[in-house]
Length: 257
Length: 363
Ligand SMILES: Cc1ncc(C[n+]2csc(CCOP(=O)(O)OP(=O)(O)O)c2C)c(N)n1
Ligand code: SF4
Image 1 (cartoon, rainbow over the protein chains, first blue to last red):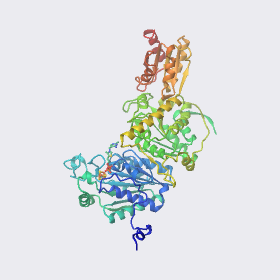
Image 2 (image 1 turned 135 degrees about the horizontal axis):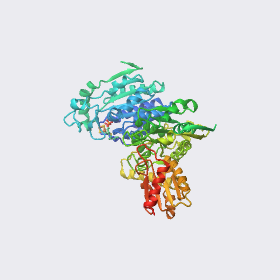
Image 3 (image 1 turned 180 degrees about the horizontal axis):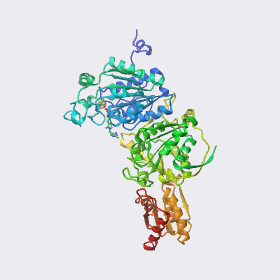
Image 4 (image 1 turned 180 degrees about the vertical axis):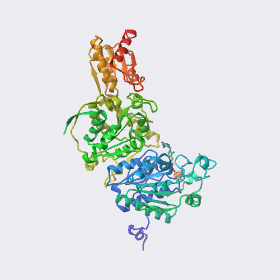
């Protein structure tokens, strides 16, 4: 067989996600944001819903999601994506509306918008990338920063007596009746990424069935903010983040697990 | 069907909003404008036209809901009063930066702080000098009657979509709360989604359909040269507004030697002052800016050769007076008169202030 026969499209086993643009990702090498973007775009592509999908980008490292995701996107003010998505979904009830937000965006400045969109049971998908730190602004403490974890604004580690405990926003919203599906996943290995994709698929499927709010947290790394190599950061994440933020489904079909 | 009704300003605005075929209202209660959302919730516009009405958890959420709806090309309005507008300012700046059409209503009360629930015009600076961050302006309409509360809804949307820019209706507790007869226009049907995509599909985020590039709504440009170009583009719009859409009203100005400049409720009160003064033989006229940005600079300047003094009458401690002074380039003496903190001046008080100026300084 000649090479030209081998590289035919029908023989291809892996290719660039169709709904990602050709613009080079601005994320640090090793960062989980890129994989999280890919998964969301794969789901939208495979479900054939791009024409009916409207994304809401946050303020954070993924503010530029609109450069990479080849879909219609509006970029919200810091923390306000759930309010922006609420309005879009209310006026375009037949559309798939999702937000993509970091932990500072969703669990600090946007706590109010998150809780109230969840409590109203808006028919939207929230993708929550929790990397335990403020990546974009240079590694400051986030509401999800672990106890004793250093950051540029907790240089001696997060002291829970003065800085509070890491906020488990996902468990919090799971308790609200308007929320239909809650899952916590990660994307640092193929196996984990496949599971995360399944959760996101389920979330968009829930939108199609008008089931209300679906919330998928992706526990991720910020190797730059954590001041580690990508591999170190993934090991650190497994050893430290996962015990505090355990992976798995938390609420399925409106029922807490 | 068109109708003549007796209504509060806030209610007239809410009814007009349904009738212009608006798609959505988002708001949070605050005196003296809660009637807007109360009226809408009672009227059930979702049954009349399909319009969405939602009580948000805060003014911040409400303005960001407006941002979301406007991103998709829908006709959307939010209303609030002074402290609530302060909370909305980040969102308003985003609307201007992202070039989104939307209407914001401020039924002003006295401040600063929690202030008072009584009427005021103390948000003039906030409305016309920025308020939120960055290089932007709002097109600002100042209604002076219940009729204008209704009519300006349509005018505001026309401007918002003409320029793809946020528009502010700057009312106050007097105009919002008082009852007058109002002529309501007949119902305009809402745009269908197909009609909307036809009109605004080149920019609105409605889902990336085949054959077009993705649409992106953002106010971000990390490269400073690109951001500068974006600001220059905004400034061009504001220049065009000045040339094409500045509005004002002149009352008895032809032979006037003295001029009162006043907008909104102060203009209504000052109209009586002009009447009283004329009876006493004082030749005074009234110039009422209808748009506070663009400000009627030229009409004011054109009057300067005949004027001996100008009184800027405002329900605040002296804010618009700065624009009057700049408009006439200090060629005519300008003084301020106004009660503040929620106190409303009477026509007689204004006349007294005018006479004092005439007798003591302007002669
Ligand atoms: C009103 C406002 N406050 C603060 C900021 C600065 N800021 C930008 S992104 C950010 C935090 C981002 O962290 P996160 O949401 O966790 O996202 P990440 O960058 O880690 O993906 C902050 C504080 C802002 N842009 N706007
Ligand atoms: S700073 Fe952190 S979150 Fe941002 S791109 Fe780099 S690794 Fe990712």
